[in-house]
Length: 139
Image (cartoon, rainbow, N blue to C red; front, side):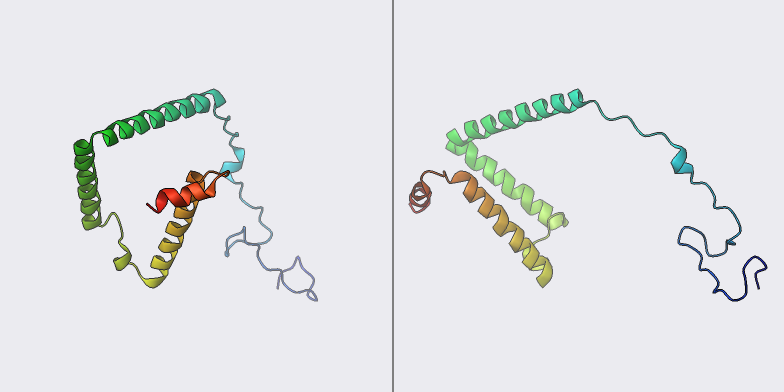
């Protein structure tokens, strides 16, 4: 029996913060993380500059791809190289193919693909003329 508690009360359960072997009369140990100061916020100018650099990089890559598509021979070589890279990644197991997935994974993968395709189509379709989109893709 605990001399600090009356006998007619139920014994208290140890809280989740205490270890199972600690006594209820002991003071809880202080958390060393609570004494740390909050980290200062990152400089927003750095984030803005980084965003600008990423935007320029994206534009540069887009221009490179457009230039590449103008030359059919170089574009074919580029596509061939991309296929080889993806095939190699699939062989190494970096890319999981649908045939290697279980039913649940395959279903989730297909759902993500459908959503991606839907977003892509909505992005390409102009709001004023949805028929243009149909005519463009039906040729």
